[in-house]
Length: 254
Image (cartoon, rainbow, N blue to C red; front, side):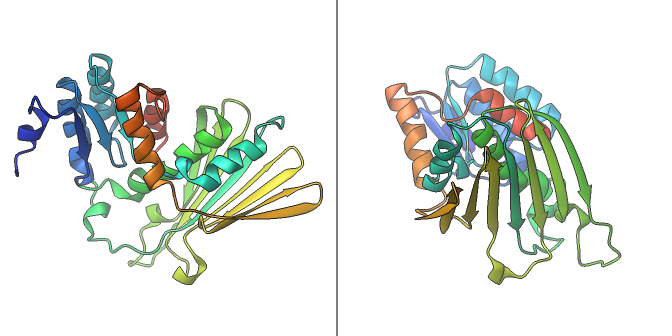
């Protein structure tokens, strides 16, 4: 069907996956929650604070569950990283570098109405990852973008973002479109309690402690794992994969 309401209002449908362009996410989430459907929506959850307010109201009155496609936290390497740091005393210092690649200015994702830009549309992934690793809430955010006269570059695509977490940890996100694609996209470095960790594009990770490094091979970015956990939540009543409050806070930061 080309009519989303035929699915949302279908009494035999209990779970909705929303994978439209970004400007429709919040509207469809609200409609589905009002029908008490379980909802998996790809990132971003919303493009504005007004949309977030509508989602919060719909969720509070709904029997449906809500999940956003923040898959990085479900990757095997990220789960191993959390276990590696778990016994150590906080805070953590996390640097998440994203060599994002260039998207033309006229691409739909760059349109402020339809796509919301790459900070709202993609950087939310990395904010969620920092929340996952620290088990803490973002309380302050600072950001700087480039300031360029090059007409082919969007300054909002090239930023340094610093986030202070409620446990004293800090997360730094460097997001840029100015690099070479052969470098790889994502590199995460984390430091805590005389221990360090590097994840290289989810291909592998190195864990450093007591003067030794241990290399672990990666098994993907967690897409399969997030879907399995979400569906188990619906079928078996398992704990929510991501707390609703955390989903909202990620969007507020962007």
